[in-house]
Image 1: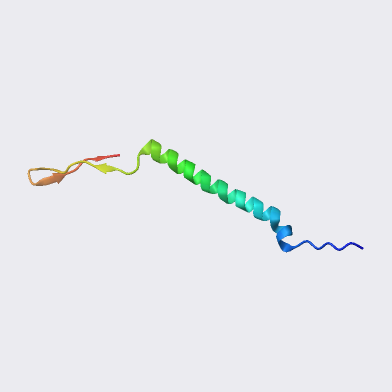
Image 2: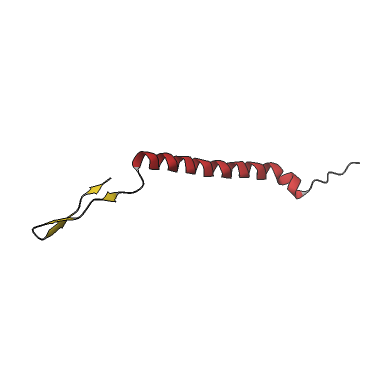
Length: 63
C-alpha cells in the first residue's frame, strides 16, 4: 500500500504560483496604466504667475 505524503507546500504550490503571477500582473498593469495616464495628461496642474489688477488678484490655471 502506497502512502500519499505530499507536504503542504507541495499541495499549495499551484495556488501560490498563480497568486504570485496575479500579484505581479496587477502591479505591472497599475504601473503601465499610471505611466500612460500621466504621459497623456501631464503630472499636475500648473499655476501661472499671479497678476493683480484693481486690488483683485487673479490667477490662471493650466490643466
